Length: 300
Image 1 (cartoon, rainbow, N blue to C red):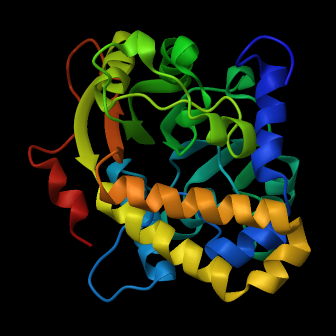
Image 2: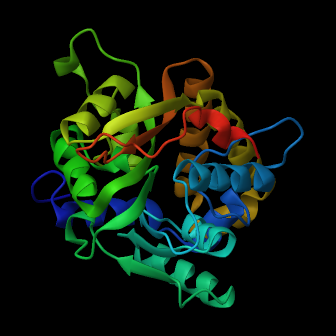
């Protein structure tokens, strides 16, 4: 790694290290949904159903409807923009710094006949030129931003939303430190898994969003859901271990198994959590556009 921390060039290298290890390997681990963030579980659901329910929950929280313009920041392999376009009739832009993710997403979207409504770009969030959007999703992406740049990140997203538009920020959080100056990125994760990744307490994230001008309207903690998801990913990896090793090397496969298993334990034991934060670019008149009982979105 070279250059200033969280500069566009260094972020591209860090993202490439983690995500450009082969789409086939990620398909083996994640399953057909190709969703690399925690699922939303109900009793008796399998991984695919739980991931579909998570995508639908995000769409409902964002109040997507036909003709809505959606930006997915850190779109991964395209699952959310595809779901939103197919099920909600939106026009969507997904951005990623991973060329392999973008190639997979474009192919998948074309096969679904949605290329006229969904665009995938290899683009940094700081380079998006074509706001405003009606809704923005940031799912498992903000962990790559870094605490020093988070306020600026929130400001960019605020500027890309129309007045009254909604942001759904889905982000892993750590427990706060007695002295935040003492926080250090885990050396193993930094070296082998997520270079330059940083976790922040949920309170800090909420504060940065509000400093950028957002009104935070809902925070849903879904820590246990990520533990269940990680257990499923580890099981899939171990079930097809010889093929995984052939795809990425024994060392890489062991690193992924170790980090996912350790992360499952961390979620189970409340060392880390994950939260969906719904925020609004509330207009000056104060009309948020949310119903009086917003948790109605949890009803399928």
